[in-house]
Each structure stands twice: as C-alpha cells, then as structure tokens.
Image (cartoon, rainbow, N blue to C red):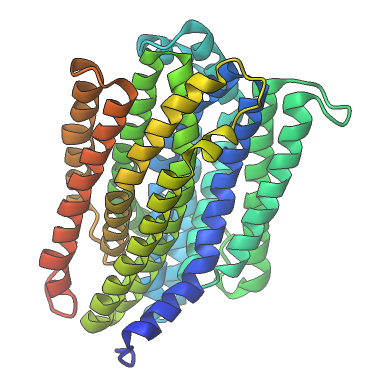
Length: 457
C-alpha cells in the first residue's frame, strides 16, 4: 500500500520528529566518550593517549558487531510496513543471538591486545595502559551490542523518545562514576584508566537494562524474550547476510580512523593526545549525521516495504539537505572557535598544553574540511541500508577507506612530511571517495529499482 504523497516540508517535519531523539541519543552516547576524554585529559596526557588508542580499537570491534543491529533496523521497518509482527519478533531475536555470539568471540583480542599495539609501533607504556583499559572495558561489548539491537528495533517502530532518555541517563551515570573512580573522589579509590573502563561497563549495562525493560513492558505483543533460546536458522541467516556487509563497512571506516590513531602514535604521545581531542570534536558533529542517517534507513525501509519510489526519492533529498546544513554549522564552529574546543579537554597546568593546542587547531581545520563528505557518505549508506542493499556498498567503502584513504594518509603524513595534518588530509580523500561512490550507487542504480520487480539486493 502506498502512502499519501508528502511535500518536502512534510518530509522534513517527519524526519525532524523521528530524528531529533535519535540525534540526541547519539549525542548522549558520544558524550560518554567525550567525558572519558575530558576527564582523562585532566588526569594526564599519557592516560589520554592510551585511552585514545584503546577506544579507537574498541570502537572498530564494536562497529563490526553492530552490523547485526543495523541490519535489524531496515528489516523491522519493512516488516512493520507489511504489518508482519511475527517477522518483527524473529528478526530482532536473531539479531540478539548474533550480537551475543560476536561479543563472546572478540573478548580474547581485547584481553591480549598489548602485543598488537607493540607490533603496530606504539610506545610500550601506551600499549600497556591501553590493554589495561580494554581488559575491563571489553566486558561492556555484550550489553552495548544487545542495547543496539533493541534500540534499532524500537527506532524502526518509531519509538525514539525512550532511546534518547535512556541514553541521557546512561551518560549522567558515566560522568558520575568517572569522576569518582578516575580521581578518587567521594571516598572512591583513585584508579585512573581502570576507573574510566569500569564506568564504561556500568554505563552500557544501564543502557541495556533500560531498553530491554521498556521493550518487555511497552511492546509485550512481540514477546521478544519468550522462548528466547529457540533457534530460527532461516531468519538468523537473513540477518547474518544483511548484517555482515554492514559490519565490514563499519569496520572499513572505523579501521581507517584507527589506522590514523596508530600513525599519530608513531609521531608521539602529544600528537596522539591532540588527535584524540580532535576526533572527539568531529565525533560529536558526526552524531548529527548518523541520527539523520538512521531516520533515512527507517523511512527508506518503510517506503521499500510499500514499493513507494516517490516517497523514497523525496525523503532522500530531504535527508541529504538536512545533513548539509548540519555540516555547514560544524564547519563554522571548527574554523571560528578551535582553541576553546581543544582547551576544554586539558587542565591549565598541563605541561604539554601549548603543543597539543597547536596540533589540535590544525587537526580541527582538517575536520572542518571533511564535514561535508563525511555527512554525505553516511546518509547514502543509511538510504542504501533502508532498501537492504549492503554488499556492493561494502566493497565501495572498503576501496575508498583502505584503497584510497589510508595510502593517502601515510603518503601525505610521512612520505611528504605533513605529519598529523597529512594523516588527516588522507581521511578527507577517503571519505570524499566514499561519498561520491555511495551517492551514485543510490541515485543512479538503486532508486530506479524500487517499486519494480527488480531485485535490489
């Protein structure tokens, strides 16, 4: 059944209503990382450098596993358009199965990560501290991925307000626990990096319990956890086939950012700390694009389920335009106020403060440069996921990030001697390539197939 034709303003209003809580939820989630970065920056540059490295590594592994959660979102949106509640339950449950299995499988490479960091040329102290963080923080992978699946399920059913408020609650808890355990406040032990890791695990547990309890109480008709142990191999393989390419796409992108963290580590502790600060600032603005991208996935999945090409096309124009506005605002902020942004992450007494400030301001200029292309590529990915097209985009992303972006980062940073600025210039090139290829894929190839007998996937 096709929906009534909507005007562009109506699309924009619908995207805003659905998307603002998702953007807020993502901002609350990234605030956890920002809180860790700020407080550890106050604690010491060495601690900040170690957690920058460890958090980048953790996030690569997280996004690989989150592919199953991201697969749940368009599938639930499509089944909801078809009014198929049984399939909604099946796909969500098998998304949880795959996420739990993945969480168990990747624990060893977090527990014994120091050798990998040393192999990648990191300083021994930084590598040891990064492993110390991951040995605790790694236990947060299970609740975070479970929460991601339930959040995708709720978002696809357009229940986004609860996602936002639970994320806010988790963020507040993270800040309080960090403040107590990193610095030894309120009678707690001062355990620095370990305190930040413990806070992260408790935060993820709070987030998971919040969304699970909400799903059970508010949507009992879906019976997500009734006979949860029963296998559904056909649906599990459908989620797996859609989720693995999404996971590898995320791995390609975050792997590029992690590779840049490794390269910055080759330049020393101070450049790595400045990289962590700039990356957190860029991460905040990226959450705006990611929230809009999630809305694009949900609404594209709904239109796909109805075979409504007009709705899909108009919605695509709107989400690209909204992302462009968000990108321009970020560019203005990074170019006009870089010093206050960088200094917020350090205490005035930090000995390396001036060095970090100089490097950080330059990196924020590069972050401003890639705002436009970063937003475009994640919006295109969201639309493609909505129509369940993930395999070809995976190859396009891998080529852009690793075939173009990473070599450019190394050549510009080390061969041509531009150091940190050159490494980040490579990010710009890789993201621009992905934005072009993925946008062409959606507009020139996929859009024309919706509403026809052609197979998108």
